[in-house]
Length: 64
Image (cartoon, rainbow, N blue to C red):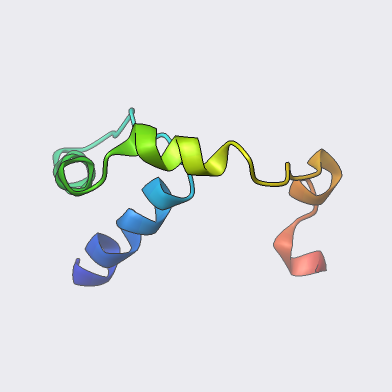
């Protein structure tokens, strides 16, 4: 559980949207991280990054 908790902040820092969570434990973890991270400010920093190639996103990780 602690490992999951620690990894969730990275999702927000990378611009992930965690609006839909199917269970109460996950919903609690996500809501805690939204209290620690102001998502709009993260999005401002991410808007200038280099866009990912759709071709790269569609390659299964085991083929890399």
